[in-house]
Length: 261
Image (cartoon, rainbow, N blue to C red; front, side):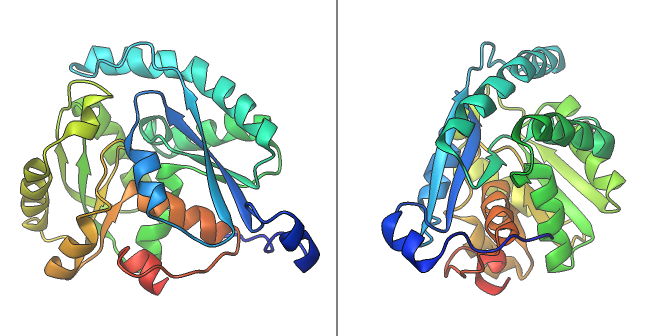
């Protein structure tokens, strides 16, 4: 993972105390309520999170066709949110949405990154897909169980991405959430049941995608119970962003990534 130096001299830090180490611009869907909740728990001195929303005109995800319409529409909105975020002069940009970053496997992820980098230039960029890969490689996991909130077409693209990256996807559990908004309303009992099902598949790690599904309150405990990495995408995103910036603060109670890496 590439890093950049910690931002600012001591005088600059004293003068610009808000975000003197990093100002993270976070691109999130207008339907999303989980990313901000999760980031509020990842408090690092000198680091500030600055969300910018893009409009979700059609939040329905209840069929494969609806999922494709959702993606088609948000592709025109994401650049607008990125444009607006750049006016706060962020130190880096983090994509607080995940479906588009997995779509089309490795080639799709690379194309997505290329389009965003055309807008942001040399500013560091973190995507959910890239963050999950770096997290899994850091933790030495190869055989995966994956939890998604998606329909089968979404699961297929997630599977393709991780396979392209050299992982063995033993099992995917897709919760088939009806809308982009309702992902955040997923009962914890459904998450627990999905984790039990995934853990029975002979895996090294469980990774959860879909940034509107908050697991930050429960996955660190499940990780200890299962004795293997259980990685929420929002935590992976934040971890990857900070480590890319050379910020190595460890956070107790936030799981293996933040506690040991």
